[in-house]
Length: 182
Image 1 (tube, rainbow, N blue to C red):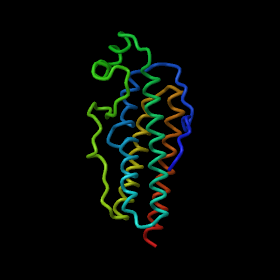
Image 2 (spheres, rainbow, N blue to C red):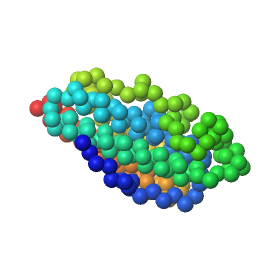
Image 3 (cartoon, one colour):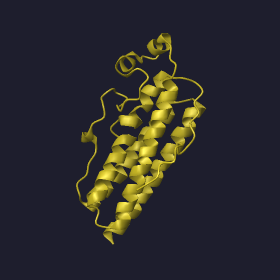
Image 4 (cartoon, rainbow, N blue to C red):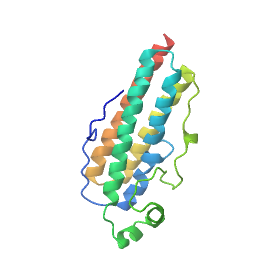
């Protein structure tokens, strides 16, 4: 069992709303390489792991990804809070707003909803850990793409933190792969 500390892993204090930016960042909430899929992938894969050390790494990273999901949701919420009708229209945020209001909904930047079809759990330690390493690199690339699109220092700061955690997770899965192959 784990304990939930009621604070974000990294502080988020975004001063300016920006629904256009929220449309991109939502992809890390429920897009194909986002935090929701990552958490479910790792927490599902852990059951078939033959080594306690590898199971523990998947559990640790899977629960951390849930914390990242909370952070991305907070970013999206802060970027879309208290929007005026003009801000919604100017940003091209109408389609999302009509369906979800200011709610945070798991979808890709392209607008399609999250689906379990974007994750994999094969029950083979090598296959799953390679999948996980690839997933972390895809998430890192998505964060890189967001950084290229974003000039708000409050948002960039958090995205850089999340990007760095993807790199750490990639390294941890590499260590787990070596453990599982020994």
